[in-house]
Image (tube, rainbow, N blue to C red):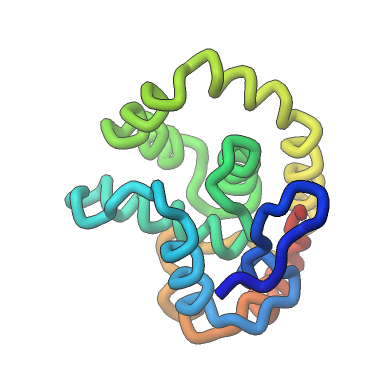
Length: 162
């Protein structure tokens, strides 16, 4: 499941995070869910909240992000600028009880400081998102499930960040 580790910090590099990954979106999601031990259990959510978190997890895989604070901040930028979700719908996700619980667990000050430190990455995400040929469909991704991530990224003109 794990492709290799970086020498600098021995963090595992996951295959879905490779720009030209041959994993299908389904396989990338499987790797994502199996490699992140502290993910929210989607089975504990219902209705629109479950849909929001599912779409967010799919976007994590498409945009090649893990769940570190740096990558979560980048995911917010990718979502606003690189998907068709819109700011209002994404604000609904951020204000959901489950998301607010996650923010409380992380700590608002720590989250704010992480966002400040990630600003250079956010600007890079905005730049790359504006250069995409098409935005990622936030909630209409079923047609992509059996396609390789590399192919999806080529179609979108998406260059992920390391």
